[in-house]
Length: 344
Length: 260
Image 1 (spheres, one colour):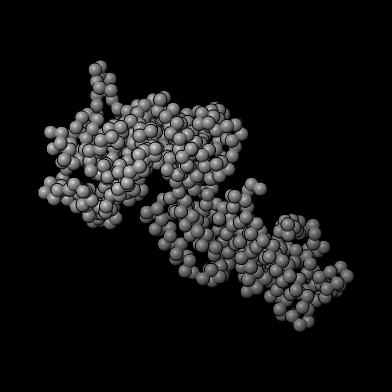
Image 2 (cartoon, each protein chain N blue to C red):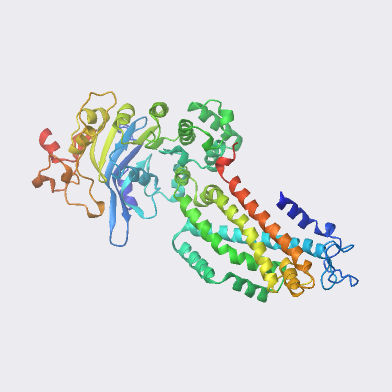
């Protein structure tokens, strides 16, 4: 349990001249557990830390089940009933999202932190027209009145390149094409001009041409100073759009690095495996090397490095110890003892 | 179409019926079809069967719509609360529903009528209570399914509060199937009303109900079969018509059917 005093203690003191630029969102030691019954708990997110700066994009990469989605849902406190964030801080602005009262949290969701989902068809209420879809939250949040909200909605749809927004605003989601819907959803997330945008695999369910358009739209937001967290397992998308990356494995951060450095010189054996097992568009032809084995059962986590059983470079002696992240530079660290040896 | 006519006829029964439903004509008792002034004949008290059938329609529809509306509202309240809130509240509500489910519905209706009396309100409550149980389980199942949909999460991510999500996101998406079952429930309620009437538990005579008329008709089956035929035929037509309405409602609530 985190007391208010420890949270306050960790908060960066704002307003003092000479402070380093404070990140938009500073996540430290985030830990989220799913309870199955009284005895068994599954630690889906285990001590995850990262920063997101204004106007910067962070990619969270990792395979299915590595805890990417649970991480961002923990931040927004949109977890299912059985899940609980047990420790950590997530300082957004000058407040810890994890200890805010639910009322306050509701004012942050949608208004200060927007979210874009993987499947726009699923993420829109099929019984509401685009106008309702886009304006309801503005009206509820008391940001503006209906008529003003309508103007903003038309503007937002135009902004994401939907032609003839005055007419389109009256249609239902199912009457739009897939690409249009995805754009409309971005418009929906951006209409309140949030400082932080969370995109959960926004390009996974769409074809490549739409993918390009989505990334361009997000890039525009980024240029306007919005911080972006993008969950993806597509390293190409991460390279094209993101500045920094966090590689997650079994609920932990395996490696944190600027995207270019990560892709050029991955340090953690898991990052290396991820890279050599993914297809790079336009890259040289090279054999795809799958990572052998499968991720560990998180209810019975083996001691030491969770990746060790699948690691080609594992060394029984050293991989059984718990491995903290080893810092290489201010922007880079990795959770593997080899990193410490190499760079020491 | 047919239903529109039926509802219209029920609403305007006092204007259409040639006689009052309780008016007796002792000159013509048990008169057959085509008797002058009584096209569908008269019953043992000389009451005009056409008039009584029309008024019977009025009773049937009033009870059926009332009961289904009552059941729908109760089911939405209980199902939505149980499905959305979850936890203890859900367990308590669903346990209550299961207990109610275990009662034979006709028996329950009989008890209700015996306790409250043989009024239209009593019938509405009795038949409504018999059907809200299945309805609220359906609502809850709908809510549970919809609650997991991404647009509900998306609404939460937009900062919507619990009640707002329940009313604005879950209810509209759950209501379609509910209205479909409700409209299929209407012929069932018409049948239930007639059934209770047949058992002598319908509305207080002389207010006509088809069940009661058919029950009386069986007593004079050999002497005056027309007494049974007219209400039974209209009953059959009404059942068929409202079942078709159910089909229509189902088609209308298929969202892809909207754009042609």
